[in-house]
Amino acid sequence: MLDLILQFLTNTGFYLADYRHVLMVVVGCTFTYLGIAKEYEPLLLVPIGFGIIVGNIPFFKGFGIGIYESGSVFHYLYFGVTTGIYPSIVFLGLGAMTDFSSLLQRPKLMLLGAAAQGGIWFTLVGALFLGFLPKEAASIAIIGGADGPTSIFLTAKLAPHLIGPVAIAAYSYMALIPVIQPPIMRALTSQRERTIRMPDPREVTRTEKLVFPIIGVVLCCGLAPTALPLLGMLFLGNLLKECGVVDRLAQTARSAIIDTATILLGFTVGMSTQADVFLTAKSIGIFAMGFTAFSLATASGVVFAKIMNLFTKEKINPLLGAAGVSAVPGSAREVHVMGLKADPGNYLLMDAMACNASGVIGSAIAAGVLWSFNVLG
Image 1: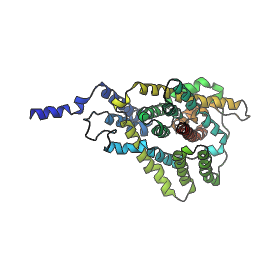
Image 2: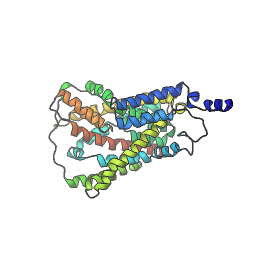
Image 3: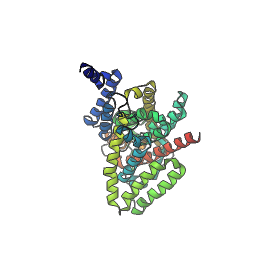
Image 4: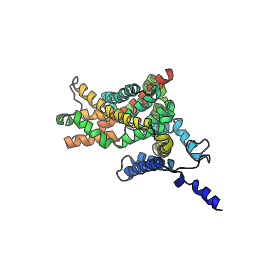
């Protein structure tokens, strides 16, 4: 009887735990705290944080419990991450939630969304210089797009062993937008530039809204066909929203479907951070490079807006460049708040959302291009 009790005790998570598991549980609790108490992207941080806690409860190998054990329940749920199913479903819901009217009102703001992807390319070069393999470098660089689903999708295709650190880095920096972006925006703009007001928008017709997802998918995916799993779903969701004849489908896409995918995506990504797999020197390097990528993306958008102002009569508020990253709607909200602090009557939200929407498209195209390069290479 005593032997059975001792055998049971040696199989408990408390006995099997070491300092790495404790550290990761603390990280998971921190993520959960930030999501609940500070309301930093709670839809992302709460399931991810709890997933980190669950994924780092030690267990006896061979019972088919862990996310990396073939045949386990969590392994099957994780299949949606490793194949890119969850990110594609999230993009469907995102398309059904997004109003591209502000982008259609001022198409030139698409350039800011494209410019903000500069952080991806700068980081790609840096990661290659530091010795990361091309597929790993591409997976790290995409963090600069500030798009969690896109980062997960590309990493699943190129460097599946890095999904955990890349996803956690991407979502961490998305949640920390109120901390990371404001100092960069203040450093790169003057008080006068922050008070620039955008002209009143024009009315966008229903025809424009209907045609946009069709033209968008043809042009964007014609340029980068490997972006089809993401952008095809994004524009499908938007067409469901704008056509007006399938409201039930659009409502389902932007509610039940995207919510389910977000829960499973966040939870399983959190679980993938098992201490024995996650806590490596490479993971720490990815966090550092990810921060660099996101910061450079923000700076690229702001600087490009200032360059545009040198050649255009109608000036653009450079703060809008910071919304060119794909973190919807966090970065747009932060740009709007910064504009209000400079001028209480300066409402930049809709223009910032235009840059944000173009950033979503731009980061997906960048992911498609990186995937193409690595496949062809």
